[in-house]
Image 1 (tube, rainbow, N blue to C red):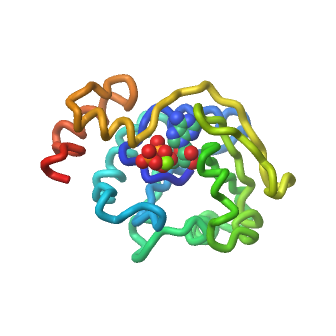
Image 2 (image 1 turned 60 degrees about the vertical axis):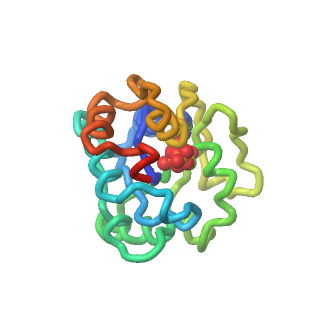
Length: 191
Ligand code: ATP
Ligand code: MG
């Protein structure tokens, strides 16, 4: 499951947990992006902070782990490189699934090397409040759609809440609330 995870929140974690269970996956690997090419570099928090928050949020689940492939690769992040690197490290025999929310799924045809993307992984599109979950135009044999418990949480909203002094308790894991406070993230005066 790729994401900016700026910060990771319970919407991400429920999506990962549901898909792990439904597809009986050995593990879910969270892959924080390096520099997401769709998002302005200035607006994205330092990769090490995003990586560590992802580690904190997932550490207690034996089926969750976090990969540094995207944050350690120089240049903008493309999912095709993520899947190629993971295939190289996990071995060709590993069956890969790529978990994505309905909003990201709707953009997928614009992603780099889209045909190879679908050859490297089976995609799982999950429902997300405010976004229609559709498979139109996508290869149906390489895509599954999954309805998951609806959590209307976004990282954008979490960042805005911190900026406004509103709580993010129960939207993100406790350790992430504390990490944000400790490092003074998402306050307007430090960008
Ligand atoms: P931002 O507002 O910064 O874009 P985000 O909440 O969309 O953050 P991302 O890191 O962009 O989080 O998303 C990573 C993946 O998780 C994407 O595939 C996205 O669709 C999915 N996702 C994020 N939030 C949810 C949610 N509440 N329910 C289901 N899927 C989600
Ligand atoms: Mg997003």
